[in-house]
Length: 180
Image (cartoon, rainbow, N blue to C red; front, side, top):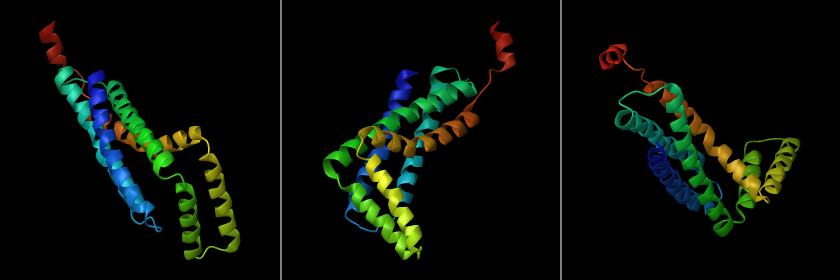
């Protein structure tokens, strides 16, 4: 089970981080951050398709085609955790070494969007205060780690849940009596 979790977690982690690094490099040079959010979440779904593949692989190759919902969800969650940890690690390297002013640029983008959307001066001030809180949080690496995990883990949990529901297989009662 460990090998399945590590292999499929690393594959998913590689996919999501490769796309994240490319898209962040692109959006970092584009003050409008165009298309980055959609691409980011699409890459997470693509990467987390390996949760389904990993659970199915374990069920079919190592567990005689049988797996409970709980075991399937556990495998899916652990694959998600490995992939998410790779994602967080790469983001920390990317952020601290290559984009230390990311939050300044992102804050400027969010406030520009608020003005473009016609928000009132009061709403823009509230948005600026909210973004300032995030900038302060991003000064602490623990918050960077937690916020980054919160960006990716919910998607992995949903995919794990759906995969476990689809792939769960109860033992065939006829097979049990034949084996006894």
